[in-house]
Image (cartoon, rainbow, N blue to C red):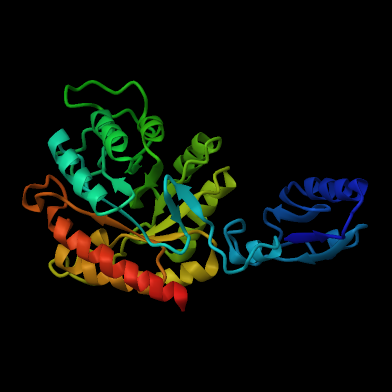
Length: 363
């Protein structure tokens, strides 16, 4: 619920509202206006509470019920809190503003393989004017025998890339476990701690979207710095489940969340496309919540020749950014080479996608 207080409401009357909220075991957030507390957002399951429970109190102007189960991120909450209903939360990462009028592209290899590979890709990503480098240091793989990533050694490669080219870094935190390096020795810090220390955006992969305890731990660990979280949709998850996973992070203290669509499981065979690119989910998410929406065309298609077309479609549908896999030599990639675009393809996608973004924003 959203409780609107009258102008210049007496502090004693505001405290009376707080006491009534706490008496039911609910939480709350306050929005301060120029004349004091203007709006109070009540958080919790209020399905059995009537609006009159709060409306009868002195200095309460009106009470508005929020019907969405994802309270804090809903457009309805933003509107009730007197924010612009159509405004998307803007998240600044270095020189990039995600959720603003400009399209933000994040590009890099699926997995970090060597210092030479990272240097080559970082160089052309920077030359193309892409502000955020993506790269996997920890790789959750279906097979225990597949390449599991370089771990902390890979994160240090990203550190060097950031220092040399001024890029910002997005990489995945796969859990709270201690990664075992190539010598069979566990790293001193757990994966989440290492990623938070070395990255600018913490990615949560599709496999962890429903790891609610992990989401809460992540939010608590990034609460002070509010380091942004890039949350990927699970391949078999509904949009409501996706939004509620984002609500876990926001409710646990970090409001800087980006939603990332990366394709869903359907009936298609992988020889044509890896997953089904759910372009239609973009306008739904933009309508339902105030978080930036990123689209990952690489995982959604699985084949580099499809990445460009799906990227443009996603931007036309309203995506605020793209997460694209690129490799300096896709044929030799240790992971997902078939869906990694070349430098030339990435340059073309960027140029055409930015044109579409400008057209969408003008409309």
